[in-house]
Image (cartoon, rainbow, N blue to C red; front, top):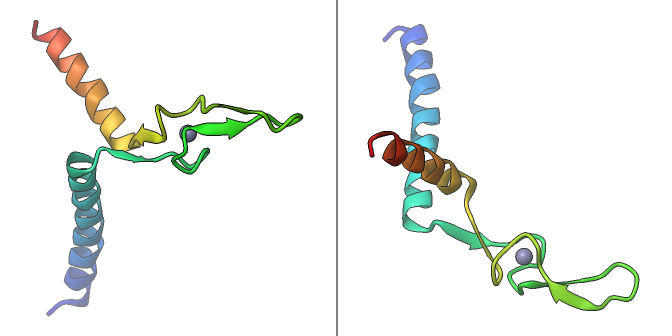
Length: 82
Ligand SMILES: [Zn+2]
């Protein structure tokens, strides 16, 4: 087998598998734990350490980036074909 062909197959299949795996993850588990508040939904203020609602998430979970991209294009398509 040609070493260039082996390298080409490896260079195309590995990114394709990673992309498909992330797409499947975004489809099966669209929400992930917020990194800012560690899933608690609350952060503390810097000066007085008072608890307040996390501004990044909704009750400790956020939409994954891939799912947000999918939703954006899905809305674009539905508005264009309306
Ligand atoms: Zn949060």
